[in-house]
Amino acid sequence: MPRPPRAERPPIETLIEGTEETGEGWGRVGDRIVRAWGALPGERVLVAIRKRKGGVWTGFVSEVLEASPDRIEPRESHYLCCSPWQVLDPRRENAFKRDAVRRMAAEKHGIELPEFEVEGEIGFGYRNKLEFGFFSTDAGLSLSFFMRGGSGWRIPIDGCELGSESIGRCARRIVARLNELQVTSRQVKSLVLRSNRRGEVVAGLYVRDPIPTVGPLDDGPELVGLRVYRSNPKSPASVVDSVAEDHGVTAIVETLDGHPFELTDRSFFQVNVPCFEQALGAIRAEVPAGSPLVDLYAGVGSIGIGLGIPGTLFVESDPTCVACLDTNVARAGLAGATILGQPAEAGLPEWPRGATVIVDPPRVGLHPKVVRRLAETPPARLIYLSCNPETQARDLAAWGA
Image (tube, rainbow, N blue to C red; front, side, top):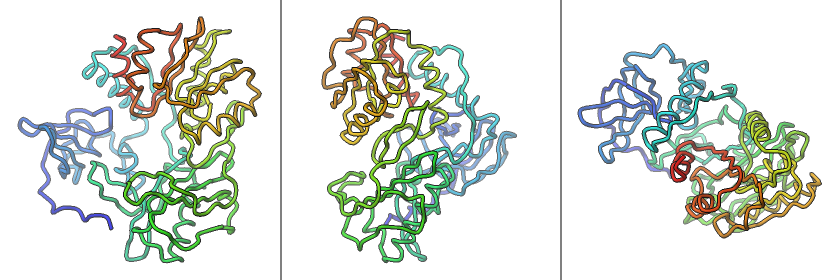
């Protein structure tokens, strides 16, 4: 069972002076910095503190005493777990993000970023992948998310509006089946669901202990594949030790710019497809005609295949992604493509003359060996796509950008 929250301490009052690039508002109490999830600049708030470390107190807003004119009501009660800026007027959110990233790059890494705008519609239902935990309630098993702050506490939820509607329906159907089987949160670890724009879903259920047979679930057309994975009960990670059940298809197909991409519940792919299509168009405009292409951290090949340059070198370490990448390259008919199934830091060949190298690393950023290699033998052109501006700025600073 999840640990119960510790005894509450009285909240503290602070005036929020700014916003971190990670989403928290920040203020001061005496000589201490207070970071508060769910707070906006200019607000006076009460903050329930959850962590005290190195002169910085971190928590979440328990009461708004003086609200910002940009504050709106959040769509979800668990918004602090998944999208703390649900309290911010969507017409202001992109500007907040732009300003927060510019401050972070300058203050933490000494980089003055050029003028730019954050583009993309602020909405719901855009995520094509969600991972849930589980929580046992009086009514039975429930989906759950972690509370922010690294406490390890979970809260029960019914779903999340950031995910596609088909993901929400399939998640609730699987939980209903687990409740029919009287499965408890001690037995199950997580549920990962992936959808495409056709509304098809593949799901992976990670279990700590043996449970009764779950599938197949044949009462709806959306859940086209379900796998039950045995996962090491001593590890909190959703890792696969073996497959206990395998129902339906292994992969679904998403189409980008006319190219079909095979995806599984375990493979990496951009979670916001319309936004990624915008990014791919911007990348395409920066790659000179005839430039050899190297796609590092390639995932299932969405960038390299999307650009369609013959002879592209793909580098990807995850075996599940490599299998999908091999299929996707063949489907696209990309001539002369090479796939290196290894970590980028394990060793890279010489860049072809005039090469464009594209990197799209995970949130932790580039491995230090890759940073050094790109610094020592820079390609003709480097394009860095990132889901984490902080680690991207760190890597750029290492190159003296």
